[in-house]
Image (cartoon, rainbow, N blue to C red; front, side, top):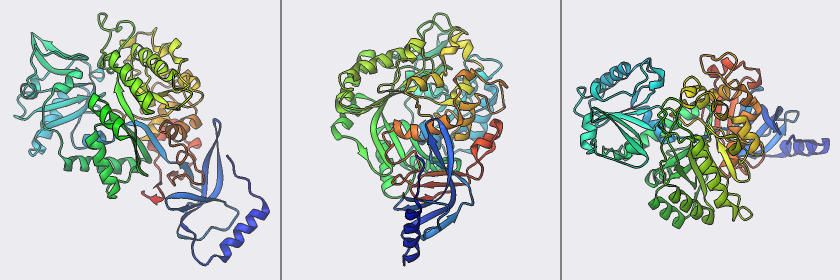
Length: 544
């Protein structure tokens, strides 16, 4: 809401400032142009921002003298946006990815093997060779890779995760150590075979069969701090981590309490029967830096690895419908428990069958309690949703999407879905309209790049970093810049029940800002990826 100030009020404020003998504020950001949302419109107001105890204490018109503070930063007309929030990501995994074999952008399996070979030579100290980011859809030969070329590289386990995290290829040492054979079976997962033997490829739930050394506490601390540095550099002031086990959550809490981690996190508990029992008995965890009041579930796998659960067979695998990662009876039981306890349920759903199941399961579980609690149960990804299901969003069922998934998948998704289903996929505008005009936006990093500017490009222009397609991908579902920025700020905060103290620039909110020298309205789409924030403030402290 735009502030209106009377001459009398301005005079009183100026007199107060002149008569004060000691600074009232911890910091002032002078000569700022703050972004304000009016519905789906975006405007800017010239003000001085006064901060106290990490929050916005006053929004002073630029016509008034700069308030006195212990520290003053002259922004010289820079554009101040509410701090950007990534509403779906994997914070710990991002830091870990920085220390593993980077396979993103590889053009062949041979290139992946070469990168692994070099990593093994450069890192003799590691106990497990990990990598991530390969995608056979980007290769000339789109067949699944096999472990054959990995088996002579080292006597250590090698585990290489596909770009979506829903499949791995590992060497025979990892399979043997984990006692995975051609006879091994698991619900909701596949162990790919060739000539009656495991190829090394494990899809979805089959990944949990691996028994290899986990990162140490010290390594996890290093991962978390590395992720924080990169996120701040890119302009993020908050992250929703989409699923961590209890031990990792408590590690984050201890680091934040000690001041060793300073990124606000909304963390979903990685569900299991044991985790449900623990947290529903314990209750939510809320601090200035950490919020734990939700669970992350998986209903299916990913489209790229053909694990997404579809209502009709895959266009390029006619006998296959995808994988159900959790039993429906279990999901319904968990939903009833969470609705009764007042916790948020957030479920990964990619395929149209998975979305149909989860949306209707949510509505059924919430119907008896909708009048009592606003639980905002989220469908994470909502990637392929039939038209009759799209209109069921809203009234407590929230689509949570990642715009760069659309531009990453658009070149091969028609092979999986067929042209007849493509209009039902990545329909972000339609989902937003169904959800009463709001939609939280994230990246799913490290599956996608964490740069929020890539999100803006994908959401508004529906184009990849290289500019294709020139006309945009299914642009009828593009978002405006204002809608996209709301998705990364006010909508993301709302999806985490945090709209009362973040997501907008207003008195009382946390002083979280992503600041640019330029107006984002004035940047051409393909220049967005080269645009970086000049300053980042989190809880009243400048971090960049």
